Image (cartoon, rainbow, N blue to C red; front, side):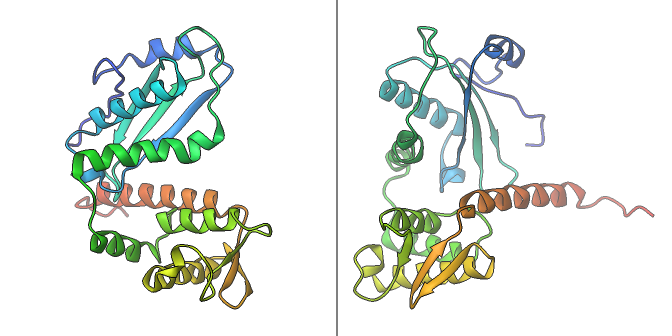
Length: 231
């Protein structure tokens, strides 16, 4: 709505940022997340969604969590920046297993979205994936490709006909190949044989950085619309 951003937490929509920073000053670590549901614009309340997600994290991790967040709407992908203190509710250092961060937490977020919006139709899923082929950001297609690479000893994504996996579906296989061709043109994947590629080690970080820069550019462009040109 054009108003200054306000941080929110478990208690309300106007969190005391200074007090949080003072309490966290001596922490050995903190955790930062970007909560970006694919259908964020359709969710009733991103604040409530984030609170529900953190409550699920607390149940999974067996501890209360202290956190702050802010929602970011003036991009193509509304999302929430979430920071969690690196302390348990007993005062110990908080440890979160990498597997939970990369897979478990994502699954919890997907479940919450499905509970509110209902399952997406096959047509909606394919339409969204089709838009990701040329995207200059980290996408669901990229996560699928990364998972496929991790399952192979040499880290090669094998999309030859007959290979097991999501590419058994001809349409999904075509989308994955299209995405890899795009990544190859961007220097983020390298051909390793017919219908085989190896992802760059920095592909994920590069694509996430590109997505962030794209959001910044679009935000600046919107802000400048209607302003007179300066000489």
